[in-house]
Image (tube, rainbow, N blue to C red; front, side, top):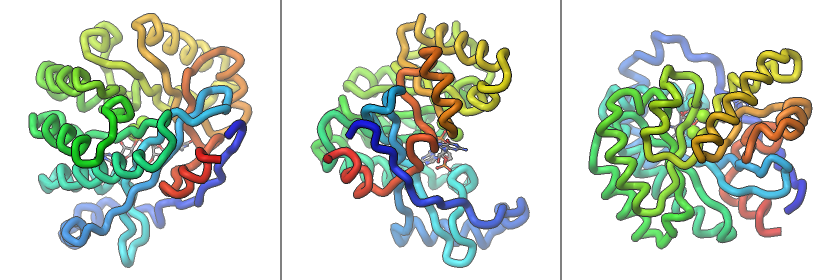
Length: 273
Ligand code: C2E
Ligand code: MG
Ligand code: MG
Ligand code: MG
């Protein structure tokens, strides 16, 4: 498994969709139909130990290929689904798929699922997660849940209580896109968390700008001082990876430098060698 680097399918989201089309009733109707037809799929992007020797976890990333428009960015259709009040259908689908696929992978590999703001406002998520673990047989120690900094800020107290329950079940909780919202580290310290995923905006320019590197290192050190593990997202080049490794600025690395999102079969092939 050492030093295997997956060269995934390079799927870009077709043409940029203009705002009018995204807001259109047609696209919403198409999404509704896709959910009815179980037309979504899931890809999995590995998180590697920073030295590249081992995959520790794979993040489930939902995919929707529109019959005419091609791939639609999840940033776009998750937001649509939130507005339509149907995002829990997507969460249920991805959670189930993620747990099922993880059961096929070697036992040391975990799977990470993104939750939306709506999921954090509903206590139903606790039961959904418990039911899915029971139905699939996955150990809670192999499930990670990612919540963005901004959706934590929505309703901090309710979100904190809910995450505590999930964490008490043995699930790992990660803050996603850290550094893009406006939460303080003092606030972060009050939440039941295990992992911080540092947003890819911290990685851009680390090789050319000493100040950006200092910012990344300082942030990583503060997060570690709180006893949390650090994932650095969006590492794209060997140069960025080298700087991060030299500076000990990540526990795990996720990014195109190691692998794009892959199918479950590709994860299996990569990890069971
Ligand atoms: P995220 O959770 O922060 O996921 C990371 C995104 O960055 C993914 O985009 C991934 O393909 C992309 N990425 C990974 N490595 C690199 C890199 O080296 N360079 C660059 N430029 N990008 C990289 P994707 O799959 O388009 O997902 C976008 C966002 O949509 C996710 O951000 C997440 O917020 C949301 N999302 C995706 N799947 C789900 C889901 O199942 N449920 C929910 N609620 N949200 C999801
Ligand atoms: Mg994520
Ligand atoms: Mg992220
Ligand atoms: Mg994101």
